[in-house]
Length: 268
Image 1 (tube, rainbow, N blue to C red):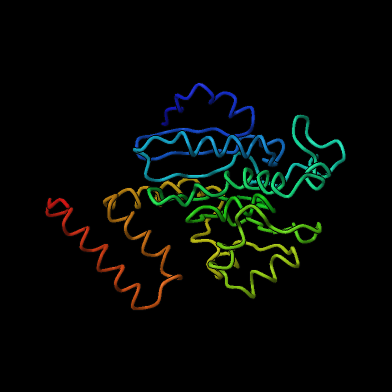
Image 2 (cartoon, rainbow, N blue to C red):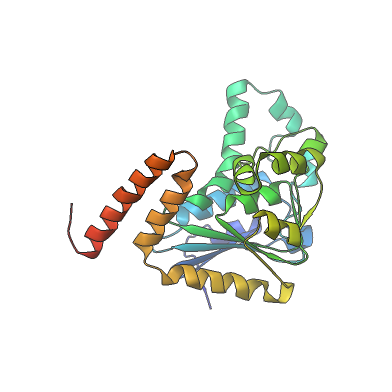
């Protein structure tokens, strides 16, 4: 059904827990360490960031999915131990590093979570089972979320004395509002499928058996619209919260002028 990416590093991505497949205008990124419930590590984050850099320009929609019973159980627990993960800095080493070095390390981790909202793509997180901490934030990194009816989101960082720092706080507030976002993060409680849909955290909830087909149906509907129109519409919606009503109307006029001229074949 899909053709694997031709990048020679692809096998190493799979060893780090990520598989990338390309099918024309659709890309599928899969977390593929189901026995570990797709626990996350810096190596996995580097693989996710690399997958984003290697997407061909023809790709319009990206599905982010995971094998096994859980989307992602969050950080690899070894990161919380004094020994850490071989080849990676431990939390204690990070805490003892200089401000600039610590900031750069966290920024490098965030790269895995930020490219999903690129202007030229629409990304869909396909989420089943547990999506905890870093797993929750990875799902939040996407534009849209389709979830199974057994989904359980939780932001556990605050309960561990940390904060969510993988680019998840802004989309969470935008989706559910400040008060509910604060309550979810500060309590670390579970959010199920029904609440996720009701609050706007998820676009759609279906049975586990229907999850992949529902996500692919949504991808097909997105691909049916002209690419230029989707890109312009996404940009308008992404910028809407930062503009006044009149500024948004102006942005709509400018975007529509570009669309009309492109459809008419009139260049700049």
